[in-house]
Length: 179
Length: 355
Image (cartoon, rainbow over all chains, first blue to last red; front, side, top):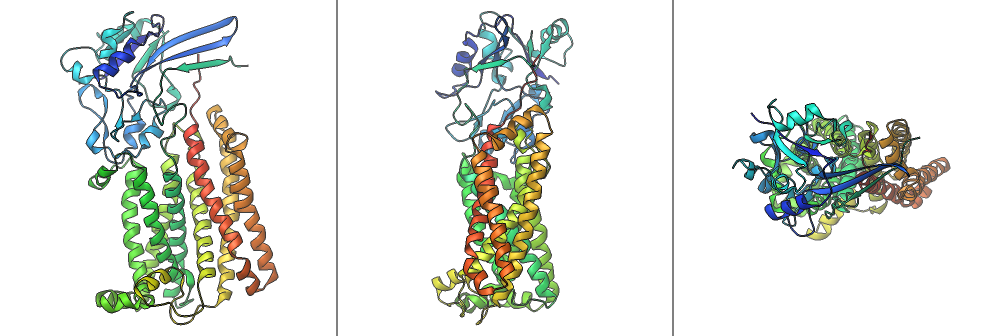
């Protein structure tokens, strides 16, 4: 069974936000909301500065706190790709998952249920990449099966230095950033 | 010295950015009411156990606590329901049991709480509201069956105490399990909420005892219903000297809560950088005035001093006259604790360790 993950090369990402617009268009994200976004992190003191630009989204954690705190099972891990999903008509909008997510990846949809990135599994089932990956002009984003040793994502993780967001939260995120 | 870090983000989701504000006024109200109901159940349960043993058969707490608890619980449930963004799907909670979700446990616990409070109300309701007892003989028979059997009364008392402790700790546990919010990551929080609930519950009983009249409760449909909340059982009131016992209990709960606040602060202050930064929201940050000023100074220290002084006077009349002051302060402090914890907790976040 596949276990999908994403690898993003921060040395190639220029923060153009094509991924953000593609996601909003593909998933009919309501105006004023976003499922993915760009974070710019600057570290150091002038003139010794480093900058990392990242396309961020739900990390589809292996140990997702949003799933374990959901009182109805609306937040769950799909069999297909072990992707974290929300079933809208099971969600009561209690917002426990919003408080439990260390990444701020969820929001309350204007219709009342909680919404977030789905790794575009509707596209992946058709053999396509997620919308954000497919439009990236610098080809900095890669999507694939982390359980397949021959997948491109695994090859990249084996050959480059990488980090995840807030590993100390213990959620084992599946979006990796190459540095 | 660590390097300076600056983050900029294009994320702009309402209720999430710039800081999480998913829970607004409804959840602090629900947590406060839940805690107060837990306190009322524990005190009422203990009083029922004493009544079953033949002590204090006319105890104010035994008969009043379930009624006050039931009325308050409905307020809390309304607040909880109003908080839901997808509220017409609320019934989904009762179609499943999610063992890892405190909110699932809490939902089922609240159902049990409703059942036990209703059964406890039966002990008192027909006699203080004869209108109902006359029209529903079944209710009268159920009441007689409970009051006539010390064993059943004791079982009801134990159920009240057990569910009160569960409900009181659950309100803290609900927040405590969320690792993403460092302000809530202290094992002292569930116990702190339990003690705060006991403070609020006993303060509400003190207020109820102060409000009640000395005569028999009215028996009309509306007036009788309202009177059940504050009027004593039977034709004469229980002795007002019994209030001293409530005040002593309240003092004990306040001291316990102060100790737990000390443990909670020490716990976060000696933990990771994320926890130290989260604690700063309470100690020096935007919630410092509410936390130190309203919760601790006005809500705990001042009522503690006033009640100790009143007890030292050994005058039941003086005690009764001034009782509303510490009781109202304790209630305000208990609500402020929930309000601060919910809002500051959502604002707290884990700090990235960085490369």
